[in-house]
Image 1: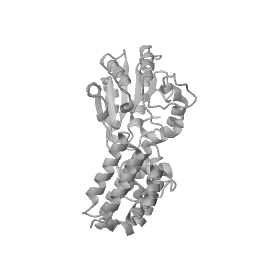
Image 2: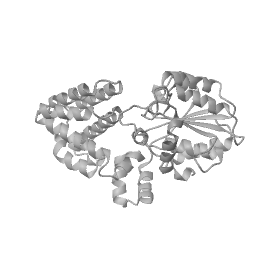
Image 3: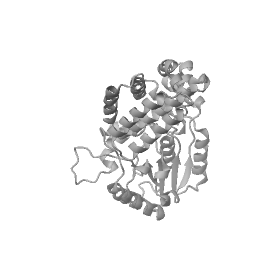
Image 4: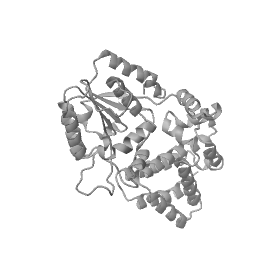
Length: 361
């Protein structure tokens, strides 16, 4: 595996190659950038290049990632990444492009929330205290360090302040603001941009066998996110489910059908919090797309054919009188869900307020 397997990102690849060849690599790099841009593939490939290995299962390459507690572990066991090493390597071997939803599915997490806990910091300290098996770097790849609890974060801070000999930390972060300021101050940030549409399009044609016309449309919808591009290839994917829920919400709100809206909010509140957040993000995108479509700016719209078919009839209901109100309502719901608010209350409140906002002209 080499940088050729990373989609696009020519500038980031060149910067990493220059770091490796220059020999002055910071002891801690934090890869930041939009979801689906290839931060993890870049970090893992960079680590493999430094270790001169072609496999992710290398004795000097250590992975840390959020985990959950499943029924096969008793309540006294402190969960660590090694408890799910088989699932992790299976996912890596399949593709270096995946997100938290796919990882939760791989762990069989159901509606649990993953985290990196105190047990992980103890395990990591032990691993990095050992000598390198090859006499070179020991590399710790930490996927989504923002999921660390306070105990683990403080332990990691001590490691960053006094790193073990020849140890390199590569963090892959999607929400760096959730990390301790002291951690952020001790790492060198490596920003990764969204993937260029042309690179997404080329990869869809060469790797997935998609026709050029379809690849062009999917690349525009993906907006630099390879995960979104792959999701568009499946009509039965999560986005299709979210579209049906969006349509149902808007139709029942327009009809002021409180009974059906209650059923809708009960259904959505049964989802895990991560899925609820993805749902609200999708709703925000659909509001934006319909607003643009309503003003006949089709060239600025990024929708699937199924989404556009609905928007042809619905877009007129999203206008300058309510677009800000609906967007703010969805953003508040996202914030509340992120802060562990009661899902039934959040989504029922959302549904009732959509009734009021839809009638504004």
